[in-house]
Image (tube, rainbow, N blue to C red; front, side, top):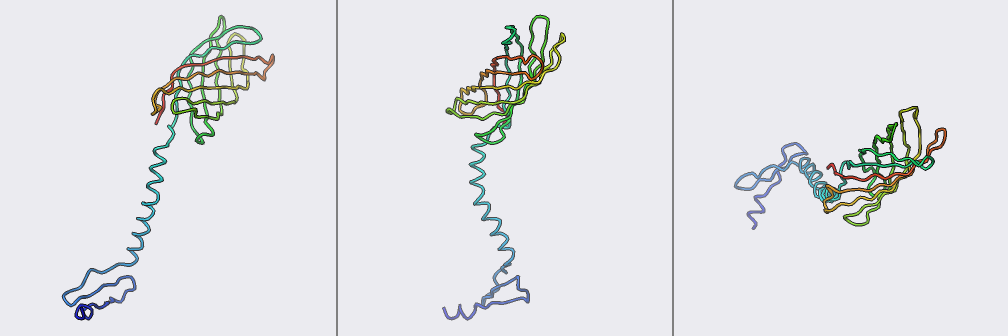
Length: 201
């Protein structure tokens, strides 16, 4: 034991950044202190943040949800009905707090076609892994042919999303709406849209 201690010497090569140890039977590999510190600063964040990133990935919201379906609307004043296809996209902005939906729908009735576009800000509520409920409001812009002109309205929407599987890739939705026009006549209307939902990862 005394021979080993006597043969172990600290040998500096003149640089404070490199230190080596020499035994009686040869020199051990040099230890680069700054490089070791850098490695520690790289390894520690990996062990700390990798589990966090994994949890985030497992709980990650889809990039968007596409909704394709059919819409129907009834004018409260006139009592007339309009029907047509509907397409919209929802983007999650703040998980469990805010989703933004933008959509467009051409509605047809005898002698008139009305194009509607809306932008809704929704608060989601997760009932369970298969059912989601949302309430939202926002502006609506519409243009009607046959001298209908352009109108700006506010829209209130309730929405139920049904996801048959837990991965929430495909499902269906029901969305009743109420709108109030700020243009002349202040037209009011109720409607409902239903169709299929597709999640975009």
